[in-house]
Length: 308
Image 1 (tube, one colour):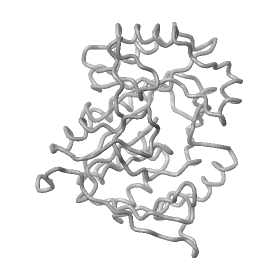
Image 2 (cartoon, one colour):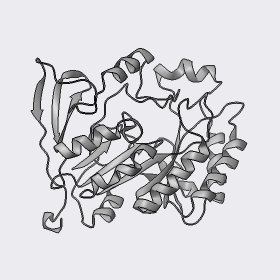
Image 3 (cartoon, helix red, strand yellow):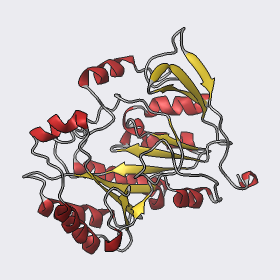
Image 4 (spheres, helix red, strand yellow):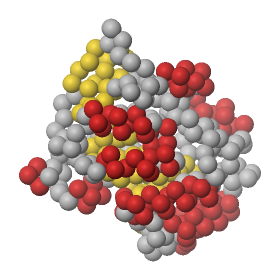
């Protein structure tokens, strides 16, 4: 099985100690997003976990904890954008994050650190000219530290429209998208393959395929074995990712990005932050007396488990 850690929050940045404790215990309890009293018990053991996919904007707190994952296969989706504090409020400087990216790639291998330039948004400050220059600059600096870049474009989710509207961020036009994509193709180093996240924006005619963030081919390469799997039915139709189990919790990410789909309000985020305990089997709080725990059926996806 593939573990996603996590589309719902930045575990490497804020909850790495908790995650390492969960690996030591060999399991994690994941609340149902629609009924928090229902908990899935998900095993975190190498015999059933084929690969872990980390999603992060700042994995620096996890760099010295990677030894705890020596029995696991994994890779990182590392979002590295050039925005200011008014867009991504609580991140280290771009320089610091580029340095962290390089250190992580040097430590685990550049094929295991995917650069996400995502979401691409525009306003009077971050116009198409800005993105052309910023992308080229970052790409040049990462050319020896990654093999893939995933580009994605902003979604105007209902609960973030007010915040992004205050920054003058409007839906992207097809002209803007294709103008930037053309520049990205021209400036990306040959050592970095360029993919689009989801099929929402079709750039195949320009030579940018729709990729997979949880990527069957990359996972097979990392683990050294074919896997039998299918598209993740829990993701949007436009998503091409293969199936995985996400162990995160919504309303827990403290990166402060105004476009975030995973946080629905500052009140929930503040409350959940106070309820976190790194020794709990749950990311937020402890199991209540009325909680119902169900063991999640898990098995390796390897076509030949004996290769493990």
